[in-house]
Length: 388
Image (cartoon, rainbow, N blue to C red):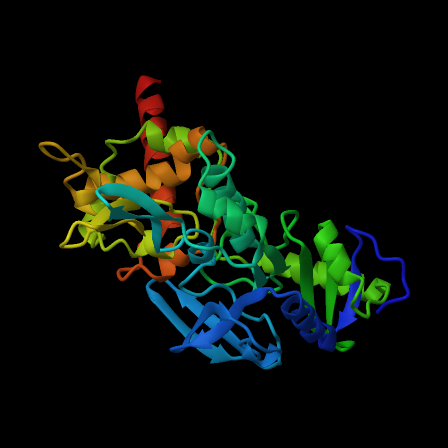
């Protein structure tokens, strides 16, 4: 335990052993700790029992339609970017029983409303992942209608985020202002520093709960060289991002060009498989199924993930509203980047690049918006020249 006066919002330095102590403290407080680990040659989120469960010394290589793991030259704890699954599944489960009823003596009785929530700690999630949670907060608990399961699970949640010191080739979080450094929404934030000074972590508490935990760790004051090292690594991650999403007037660009010919070009490549919506940490489309036993005595109402890429998702009496791949892709991208802003005052994209990596044909959302913008601009310039 440190003898320093620890305050919220102040950055300190800890040795790598303190990260293991942090994990231990969370488990001692009965948190189920969820963090990055390796399964089936991918980095996914799963329960962590010990620090060695982390993908130590491993990174993930991203390309459009391609993903694989690679050994690093160091023993970084958090030297990865993002895997195929987000932590969304813990707050908004892919399958959730929201109601159970039973017929007793001719009367219908409710025997269950929502599944029980767990005391979860997200350990080592990236800033973009954290931003996705803050966006889903707007959807599930900050609007007129509250999702009770999400709220109860969210209220019990503890978040340890790890800032990015390296950028993946599919990352564009600087465009969406969701990284590489977390600014708010975390209980504890860490920045991994591996250099001539050793293997250390810059750490800070963002909440009272985080401060309570931080006070139990052996922290030291940051030196000027450590401050500079952290700043350089964060700046390097930002500067080395290969992709960029032009967000200026993006909503107007897309909504004013719903009949642009480039949508048809995208549709020729899109398989309408829904992979992009399944890996996206903010997509929230769902379906409700009512299941009844053969006897009619037991009934369940189940919520499952769905996708706007499914033709059935837009089905109403008489047929599907969006019967073509073109209309379904356009719906997804314009909602994510345009009408989402009208609904929730934010982009629905956090720049993680998952939709690019896990698209079987490598469709790149940043490139598609860029092409529409370039063609619209070129057309406007041509029209202006003709008028002159």
